[in-house]
View 1: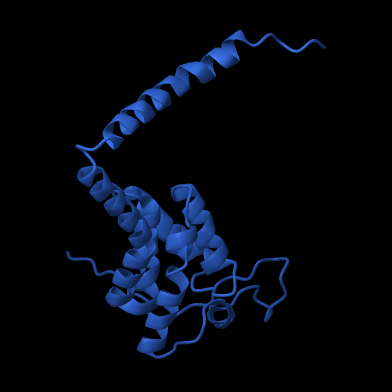
View 2: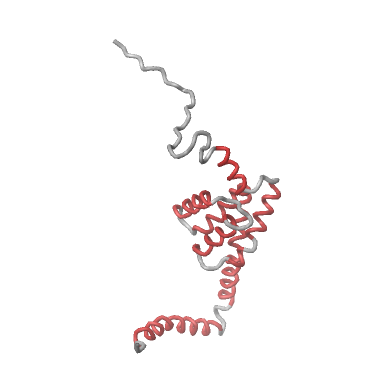
Length: 185
């Protein structure tokens, strides 16, 4: 004999109310969550306006973002989550940071690109990537070209002297720590 399954109720059922909350006063409703998200994230603008926002936000960061990924992520948090721009809420920011840390490469560059993409699509991501990284690229290119142009010059001796001084700084610093007498109490 075949047994039939009982019919499944497909209607939406109400969630039970916590005992300490009165009926009709749910602590978080879907409409309240949507309204809170709308207050955090700016209203939609034209695509060109969003591209300009990405450009205006990331152009100065190429000049001021020194200190490595930890400093960059702090700068992004202050600018895009807690600051005037408020492009992202904290949950989305943490998701982007987690994705950036899971992928190979510099997390801060990946986050800059992801924030540009989330604000203005793929072109926004390309703009944020280039503006965030172009200053460092230009400095490295300039130094590399200068060293290449001066490799047979008298400055090579200066560069070798600089290398020797820098190699001696580590042992000198360690000797200061090791051979410094303790302070009397």
